[in-house]
Image (cartoon, rainbow, N blue to C red; front, top):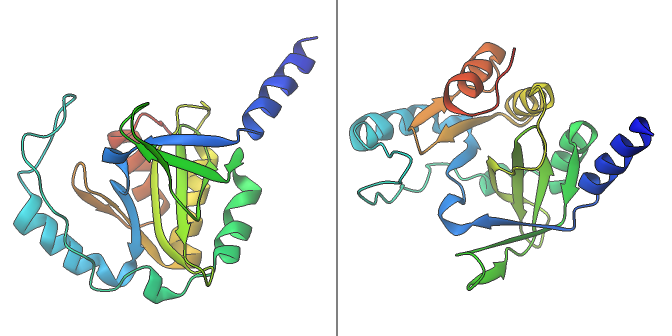
Length: 194
């Protein structure tokens, strides 16, 4: 009986049809081409060094500059990302909604989510199936040991040559170096890697 119940719970998670992400959290933890590493580091140091929020939000608004090299310019096909992330994800959602709660809700077109321990990795793609945005945010659906999330982040760094920029903190993470990812997850998120 216990094994059947666990299987039913897992199936329930695997077949989630849609998810909502509050508009304020879109792209707050973003993946960008590694060629942006030094310009992003300089931007963080010069413009965002003292920009930190707390559990109640931020006191000021900062507009993040566009990266020197966009993700779209890298011409990463959605199928490449799908084949990379799906085998190690806990679930896959084809419909992502955003807005301001129950009063303003809209669908993010051509956007999907790969679910992992505590977090989802969201991808938006254009009509040519090229990834135009890739970001990560809490999905509150699965708890775990974080190992698949760690593996996914490392694959994004090694196979797609991307870095992670957490605009909330603000900080950069080189996704090729596994202990840097572990440190980030342990120190700045609620997903602890042991």
